[in-house]
Length: 298
Image 1 (cartoon, helix red, strand yellow):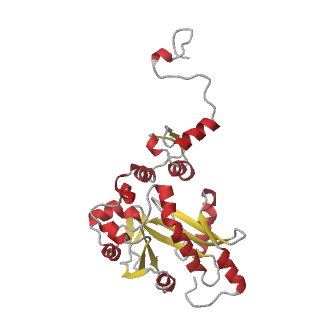
Image 2 (spheres, one colour; image 1 turned 45 degrees about the vertical axis):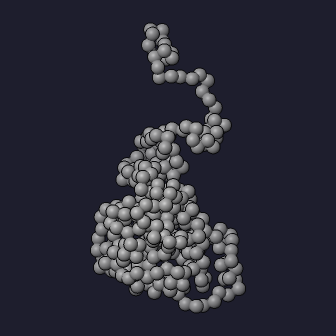
Image 3 (cartoon, rainbow, N blue to C red; image 1 turned 30 degrees about the vertical axis):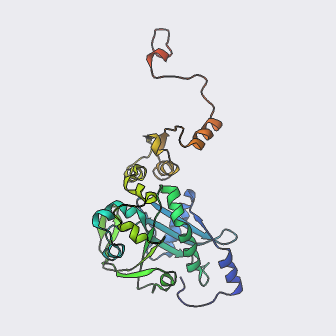
């Protein structure tokens, strides 16, 4: 990441003008993690809970940068003071804040100002991407900077606010923290106007309120620690979601039996169009069960 004021050359400027960002595809995870392990000073990451991974590419589709956003740190005194929420509000609303836990500019592809350009493109779409995948947006983002590696110039140039140093604790599993005695500099940024005011309000705005009551993401969180390899997950129609299916199959190695009703209509219509109806209907009632020669069920 360049922290100076070096201007890009004409060819480098073309890269900046043409760079695009997209969500990582499931089959790209091995390459993504291998590059983090090789080039990022914190190495690969296995985030728990809600998360999004992004890839920045040039005009030819070559990878330029990698980013990971995942669940925010549970306890950060400087962030909590900045937001102004209570401990109870934090526990209910933490999923409205995300942590930019990895940002890697691939060393053989970087050009001046690429970091600022990529991060700006991602932050412009982050709220909607989170809404699409998890059913709620995020309104704030935090990030940690190792003072031994970077001075945070790019963050400040993009409107991030430095709140101070962390105590040095780091999460290595869902609810397990270790203290490596390496405090990081904490930067934060609102993703929409008056985000902090919304997070500390007595009642959340309607578009945010589902985060406190929506059982869809809660069900996904419950699946995270489970071994679903070779198992079939059966859930109610409420949980017939693309992200839930992806978690079960792509990440946990299981299969699913999801109920589809008339809501949402496009999914039901697509199923009716792509999958032919059975030749004969059936009913769990005794009167409709086909009988064998001995009166039993065939």
